[in-house]
Image (cartoon, rainbow, N blue to C red):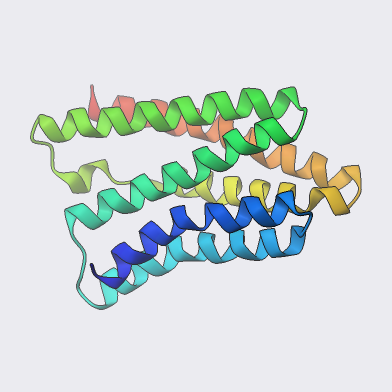
Length: 175
């Protein structure tokens, strides 16, 4: 296994310390683990391009790792915070992630070029906004309600952008 693929898989493994630290009320350690995991999203692509290790498998593994990482965290925080906003945003984001994954798989089965199925700029914005929202929520128990409200704003915004980007993908790939 090459380094970029290892980094993609490590993102999923980082879910364990993020959740354990949070549950033990070690919020800054939870955030630090989250930030390291988030940084692997940048590093896997960087090392793949730098060392000419890009592959279709690596691209799809990176997408899968992102979706498992974000969806798992969202589902977990839904059970840790009593918030209708989080619940609705989680349903929207996770359903979009499942749908886009299925659509990509369908398009690949129809012999589409995998490069046509990569994330566009809205997908990248969505991911960045999700990461900010998730980061804030991990430290919200030690700060004021303002930080929690900020995290809700970013998670809600990412849900809206998620569905906007999904509609753009549908228009691009299906029409």
